[in-house]
Amino acid sequence: MLVRRLGGIEVPVEVLIRFENGETARELWDGKDRWKRFTYLKSAKVKSAEVDPERRLVIDANFTNNSRTTEEDTRGAMMWYVRWIFWIENLFFAAGFFA
Image: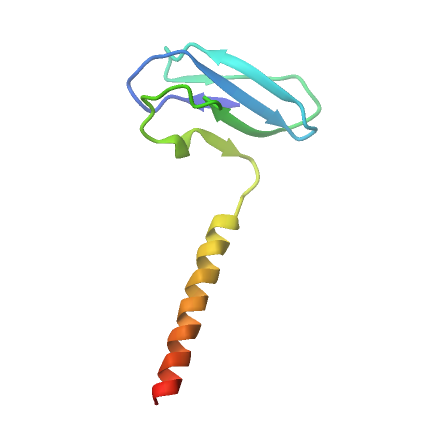
């Protein structure tokens, strides 16, 4: 698992790693290097990793880039797709009503 620091501030931070079998590992990263690689000798694969899971760093400007998962999560895109279809359908319904 590779963790990368995007900003310029070097602070120690906790990294939470979740495995497919439900196990978790908490690592402390000093944040001095631009990136840190964590390696594990386990049969279970890494499912996700999250930097600063308790959000203790109040100087973090963007919390959305603090985690990654190995599986794609399309729930957000599906929610916007359904809303878009709803409004298009209502637009056509209104156009048909006034035609």
